Length: 361
Ligand code: NAD
Image (tube, rainbow, N blue to C red; front, side, top):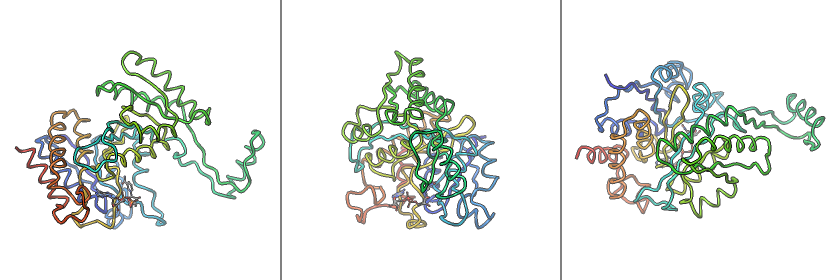
């Protein structure tokens, strides 16, 4: 019996990149029983919902899942499956490595860092009140009664909750990851000079936790706007970054851009009871069904999954194989070619086959 993993192929280009990942992970020889669950657009057609309960139950049972991207239908009354999964399973840590891969058209070749984004709080917690709604009017009245700074009556309101509990668990997770994976430094990113209470709490929590790791892991704090400039100019100074939700979202895309774009950016959403691996990119509907897009981000997410389940050797071999294929630049998809119209570009499955071939050598 192999390790049971829930596989959510998703929609758009999801099923194609998920199939490529599955082929490559299977080719490592690690025995995995894939439990495939239908989510996204095909699940709406079949079950009337993009996230059937069976999919959530399967992840709860297996505790490990990997997914292709899922479209968020705009204006059809469905909530984002991605957000629902993070909330249902309390996947509080979004982990995104950003590392230069030789052969890609990276903006900066010195990037090698891992980003930890808090996934459940901050302005993304979904506590929002619309312009002129009764709730917004009520809140504005209450705020104006207690605050010296006045909120204009024609304002919509978003609340930015940052808790001790939420900050502690993401910062501790980042430190523990650094220790286990041989990293040297954690940089906490914030804007506590302006948001003294919310970002200030995140910073103070980090400073306290850092004391526990003194002598093992270095710690520093960097203001978010400065961090964006530093990452573009001197990314080699950074190792592990830990950020609240909103800054984490923006900075991780910035780093994905630095190392060559969405096609090669993997990710994971980790909670206490389940881990869900997925590429950073979306369902790119215009390319769906064309066997054209880059499977690297999803395969690298599969490598993160292998490491998570303790299959370090298989992860290393698969990483070596994919890096070799990209470096050679022959059996790669259009976006990894110097000229995007290069007729020698191969399809999604052909790139996966080339990686499998290297693994079998
Ligand atoms: P997208 O990432 O799907 O695509 C943007 C562009 O990036 C594509 O047109 C393509 O040029 C390029 N791209 C993306 N993946 C690629 C790959 N593997 N290989 C080569 N090029 C690639 O972003 P979008 O168009 O903003 O979103 C489309 C849908 O995906 C939306 O409904 C969005 O909500 C959803 N989405 C889902 C997830 C997720 O499932 N985690 C993440 C982001 C967006």
